[in-house]
Length: 401
Image (cartoon, rainbow, N blue to C red):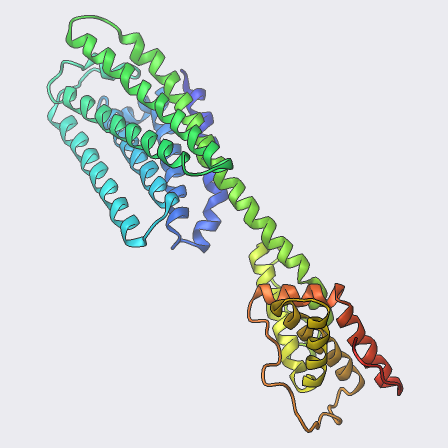
């Protein structure tokens, strides 16, 4: 494998990290998002620093032959830890347990990384090797131990990841199961990579030459492992995020009728405030909900509990459940208040013996507001309330049916 074989996946993971970075800045407290970004950053680093041209350049800049060896091995160890931490956070569970397990994996592989550097410093590797460091120095004191340690760390991570993924995949369905299966396959390739490396090293110890396993076969296995693992991690997370975005955009769209009904009724009659030119869907939903609440706040003096009670009774009589009946009654009261405010903007006719209802609108979250918005568009009870208000204003009266 040549430089482009390493730089292309490094660029791909780097681009994925660049797309994730804004989300990390906004939600840096999210452990799952931090784990994903750490995995992408370390994956980019592993591919970049494992490329033979980069190895040669790092050795030249530092002036230390083969210093790229412990650097790449330490990055591989950190990458193994990041995969395990991501899996722990992805699986979820009690936060204290998740943090404790994550810290143990991080501490263990940090110790491995430090030991790799110490062993390299104690050893003697004066001849630069860009592709076969493992086998060339397989019998060199301390360098030999460094090689065995990093391969052992990879093996432990591979076994743990394959076990966790296969066990979890038996408990889930759909894309998550497919993703976990792909990750397990990826780590089986990773174990094959470690096995070929170990075989080549053991062959050197026995006086044989199987270096081609380490320099030619192992990199191919590592590429396959990276491909399957990347697919496994990205597929469920990407579709999970896509599903969340679809839900958010659906909420935004369904809030439309209620938002349009109340548009421009905010404090002092000011139109809804503008937000950034490329806002997130969550921000748009939050802004729309805020505009709706501001509009309802300005309508509070015009809310009529009699309209609410009649609409609620009509909704119950039509077979609506308690939550839906309340949403229909709220929507009917809102649409009546909008028309009452339009007919009497100064509020001269607001004095009512019963006053506004004790709980003007029941919508305390997006689900209630969505129900109200849908009732505003589709409910015949709300349409009847709207008609009754119009007839009342024209001098005729008709009960809400």
